[in-house]
View (spheres, rainbow, N blue to C red):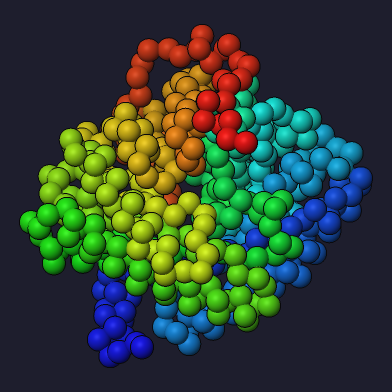
Length: 452
């Protein structure tokens, strides 16, 4: 039974602590759109997305009004486009991205994800065509997001794909240099990518999913931060219990919105993603949660332990609040999208090496990190390989969304605005990794992959 205290507490969380539904994402299968003629395929893609998601935005807006719960983003994810475009007789895959972009604009969503390829064990001809088209596709579209999965615990790491993605990230930055390399903010490289992720830039609609589905991503770093102020100085068991209880309440709200959106859109409910997703707004930061536990600045010694507690408590609290939990579900640490992370990076306390260590205990990985524009493609590829290794060995999802800053060095800043925020340019190691990356081939799967 919901009492008056619970209602007033939820209102306070929404009005004062930045509690919101970060995204309602509709996943759509495009396998039925495969055509030998690329123009016919693009037309089919546009028609199916528009037909499936035409009511997504208005229904979400009605839910916002009726329940008083902000839904920040309405998004679409589709079948990895390499699987769809591969049926067409063409070498130019950019028109497929343009069709996705037109459909997203027609539906009124914030982003559309799925300009993607899954190449953890090898690349098909279609996969390689799509990957090589990513820079042009992201520079010529507004709403399209792209992802490439280069490794998995089961398959190992495709180092040929890692090398190629280092070059693609670099080229994407250069081709969108007039926008501070904005294209790279819409491109993520995964290990162990999940098929039901509602968050961008990594969302795509997996082949094991239904024809269409509703996935919801909740947020609430500000709510957790405020809750921890009430237990200042108390032992970590109390801290963990406080986070668990708070995560439960946040996730219940996500479950409510997910079920209502599913009913109104006559689309199966998929999952609630429990992730704490920060924004550049003051009071909505994961870094500030860690500092509330007693760290002077995020990135100092103890940060990884604090993040491990936070991530685990969020999962434990949230999993009991939803009938189906999925996606990434944990704490995100995107530098440019977190006011506290930005401050710590500018101080020099938070470094790429420390962020890599934090990846071992949280969701995703090196996310929205700006590096000097002259960083070699081989160094970017090596950073991707390091993150993929953490994901592969630890059977978890890791990712890299790195932003080479065109024409800027350490101490500079790139500005992307909105939820993407701004990022201080962080140093990378000057020593070369070129000979390592040039080897190519595949890093074999670890022993723990043999689970059959």
